[in-house]
Image (cartoon, rainbow, N blue to C red; front, side):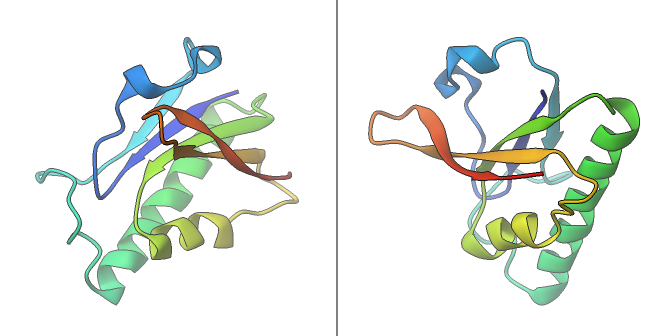
Length: 116
């Protein structure tokens, strides 16, 4: 298993993660040279750049951790970026994705699983 932390509109607070994710390899996707914020994906070009970066994260996992069968995705992203994550999932090649949401208790919990 692996756990990408995707930070676009806000930072992912690791103290909010479930204890069962502790110790898993973490791959982070965050903006370079700026802090995460709500206006980062304000154009089609920015969304396309995010989608490209997400595909690079998945390629890194495939190349560096080929034994991974399930990826836990903790993402602070707007809806179009979340759609891009699911849109580019290749069931024939990518591991299952477990997508987390931030609950009312300010803890991340599984919200959706996209099978391999």
